[in-house]
Image (cartoon, rainbow, N blue to C red; front, side, top):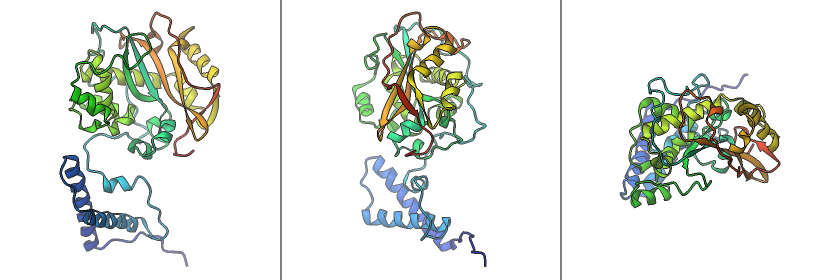
Length: 336
């Protein structure tokens, strides 16, 4: 006789108990975030056990069902209205959101000559930060599985020291809050829906409030408003995602590549000498060198109509990459 694989249904009483347990956990989280005294551990421990047991019962036989990492945060984390990276493969951000005027960042008389566009290869980054929500929820169909995504856009005075043009007109209190990693309690930037929606696709780390940190540390030195700064950041990231270089890396997911091959590909697409504006950054993950990031030097006066290859400065830049001769292009899945 075929085994009955249908999932059990919790009785109404069990549903009520499960909901109450989740409410207790949510209240405790909010109270502690506001600096109040946490609820008694005996109460929260019982609530957590009840909520987890309910999830197991909904998923099937509690003796054989394994609780996945993506289930736990649904119980333990407070509700949020922030957008999250979409897993819909049909949702591809545009170079500039349709509801945001093209080039709203243009015409700024900035006193710095360059930007450094830092783009992450998220699967490899996540090997080093597996506890982050944007990492344990990453899927093969999500934008950041096959495209470089935004880490930050950094004003640069040309000396390649990315920490000397930071925290412009920021109070010492906010600087310390940023350095403490308390990013999600930063002042609201008031981003429009269009910019924020694209940002949470192009910068998965925004789920962990990376965009708040990047604005306080780097964006405040851009002489742009938060809206213009992230409209520009979105534009550049989306523009690069349509490059042949991005496609070349994506085609080699789960394989080794040579440093010189990537530099040659970049130069072949963007013109002779353009490889000097690209720095390849690698990290060692369990003995394997993985590509985790690109640093791309761009000029400050960026026109919305320019192709990516027209954005490089008219000066010599010495690359400062950290990748060895051969390294790995990581695929989605922690520990792969």
